[in-house]
Image (cartoon, rainbow, N blue to C red; front, side, top):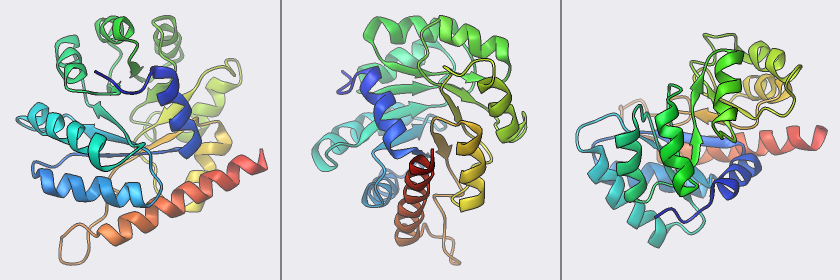
Length: 225
């Protein structure tokens, strides 16, 4: 059962602006990464459904986050069918992110008032997703389908549309400035945020620093508008 409503999820995504996304088969590594992002100020985290037994990992993570990281909103990404969405909702997902637009996923999420962020690449897909109840749409792969200019071109005729780019987003000030000034509602960030050190191990201190830096940049951009 989700702890947060879809409206609450949308509001928290807006207030922090940064949604880290990550998958690893080792649950202890995932916990350390989530904690590093949490310590940096992130309050939304997308665990991606990309490996065998991801549902079991997520089930354990969901319980752990509720007990260990107050206020952290945990959701699941890379969901492409309604059966998988239902499975993760039962395991506590607060939101469902998909790389595609699948109306069957929308119906499952709407029944339970779960936030659903479908992947869209055209104005028609975005419009259809909103008809199906998507509060926020994901553009993916964001850099490849036009980057910030694509968001700007959508927001011009459709200023009510809330867009989360994913793919091509990095913690640098120039990069984040380009996305948010174009009209991004929030951004998804993976490997550019969840970095490793020269030994090939995840650099948890650096992840915290980059998360904190990114959220600060977004907050400053918000004050300018």
